[in-house]
Image 1 (spheres, rainbow over the protein chains, first blue to last red):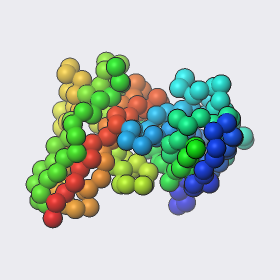
Image 2 (cartoon, rainbow over the protein chains, first blue to last red; image 1 turned 90 degrees about the vertical axis):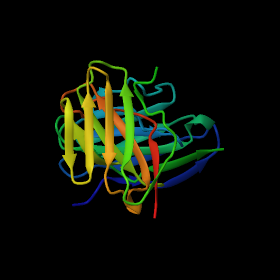
Image 3 (cartoon, rainbow over the protein chains, first blue to last red; image 1 turned 45 degrees about the vertical axis):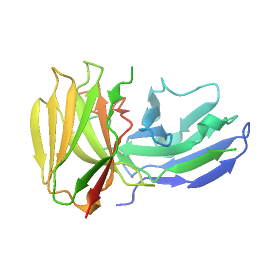
Image 4 (cartoon, one colour; image 1 turned 135 degrees about the vertical axis):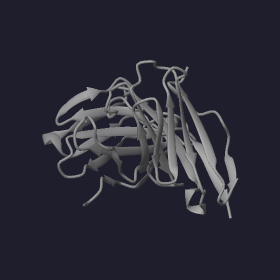
Length: 114
Length: 113
């Protein structure tokens, strides 16, 4: 079974530039998550989708971050404009349904803002 | 106050010994608790889940939950070099745990051969 796919794996941008990350969840997984993990910290949930709908985006900095999940499958996370403190690994994860199932993480997209 | 706290520093244990990790959480409404293992440069992977008070054993891993004390722990018996990783504690307000999962910062474990 293919895992959660993310791209790009690595990205270096200058502050105030924009960046987009793409995620393809495990086939059949209705729930998709974006987490931000800053070095030395645990992952922080940015946004959770159930199919096309947003379940939780309370920790998403909406002035600069946006995310969408078209057709309930792939998702894109965008940052515009980027700040130095956005340097982190952006982890996409998915689970079969919202409840009672293991969350599987992708390998992450490493962002460095200089 | 962070939702999930893991305060102890890196833990070094000799091969074959028991590694003990602790975690506290602030939200009394938390229902589900998890331990994830994260190797350096890799993504987290689930190793244990626990939903009710007491102990839960899976192979060399034992998770312990005490909701009254808002405390979760993980024991790794017969530690192996392959257990060297960061262990993340996580909690969720939903019973089955996939909503609003909050992670601690992690504890690094180093198993010395």
